[in-house]
Length: 213
Image 1 (cartoon, rainbow, N blue to C red):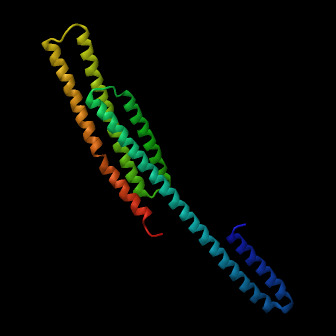
Image 2 (image 1 turned 120 degrees about the horizontal axis):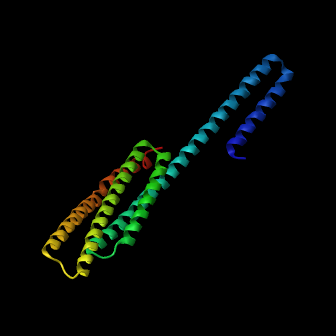
Image 3 (image 1 turned 60 degrees about the vertical axis):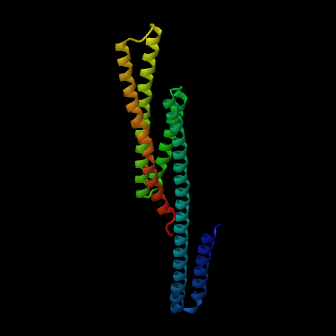
């Protein structure tokens, strides 16, 4: 039995005792006792409701702190994975595992953002949505970059296997490489701008968590 329930039981018992005790004293005494005891019960009920509201607010605050923290950790993990993937692509070394890892980190971030919708408030949920959208844009551009690099490398290998690269082949490779470079510029630029969405989310979450209860 918690303290609030015990207090309510005590008030009800006091109410009953007062009514029984007043029964021998006449109608006027009974009404006075009932009024006094009923007032005590109402005060106790209000106190219990206030305690429950405070406990609920504390729970929401704690859950929000945990959820916001999960978003920040997922974002940091994603940024690291994206950076590794882009370094591999720039260096021209295999990047499939790094890209797969970045996609997994993207999914983890989107999942944590989903929890914010339930816990709120609206301004934090909106900031989290913007961050999630920016992350998905970055990953989409990275996939386009990876596909362009793959096309370039496959074509290069094909030309090497057939014994050389003519002038027309060289122009084709230059064109494919240009496409890959443009895709890379878009992907790296988008990744660099992620800090804007991150900063907005961080500011919104701090304003909620640091606000006076």
